[in-house]
Length: 315
Image (cartoon, rainbow, N blue to C red; front, side):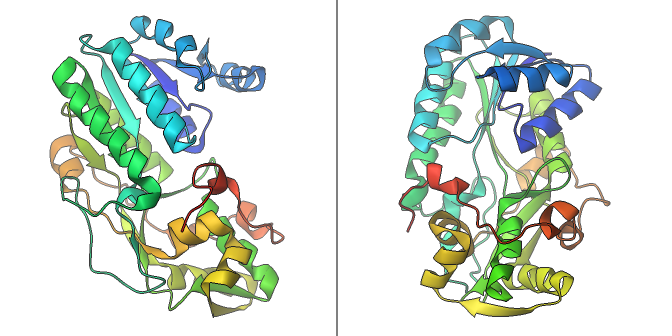
């Protein structure tokens, strides 16, 4: 299959290119800059130049591909604009199109408490005001299946594993600069998670056998933020402590506090298991071991601010 990966230089994108290459796909990565082009070429990939902020530079490229996977992290309104343009360009072509969303669309703000809500792929959910635009983009992608596009949505939760950094885990390490590793409130709120290579497997299976119009979740476990903070504290020989919202925003950044650490974010994936035949690899289940990677342990206390570009006024 000739596949264009938009976001091939990212954390999950790199894992997906490795997985598809092993399966014999002809992979092209979209590059916005010379640096991105060099990274893709260095990985042995074909390269197409285009700018996500100007979809007109991308849409003429799509005719040569059998499938397009959209995985970049950009401003949610810009994301909606470019996805709409791509879908318009391939309407009636029966190409496969996967849009990467996230389980943040149904995160429940609990300020550190547990919540029983755990969502499967087709469960209704209350829409968070921070991610309303992304829900609209998801709906647009799913509806494109009635317009001659084999379109699908994949919602990953917290992604961890080699080849990149789980920014929320890095935030826990960064909070050690306060003398303890922090969690918000009681820290009983949960986050679902998945190893990056298991996520890549789900994308590959969706390209091969996913149903048009489907949403697929990608989850292999869930943990409380308090338990994760305790493991980071053990590794750093520190205590843990509860944070209020203001202090959490100082330590974690506004967006990470309000989009991640204040929320309970639990997902299930029965459709992924039943339709795609996916199961997590038994050697990719221990997120606590991930916390000990040197990339995290070397953090000297810098908070993560990168979510601010996507959720500048998260509350």
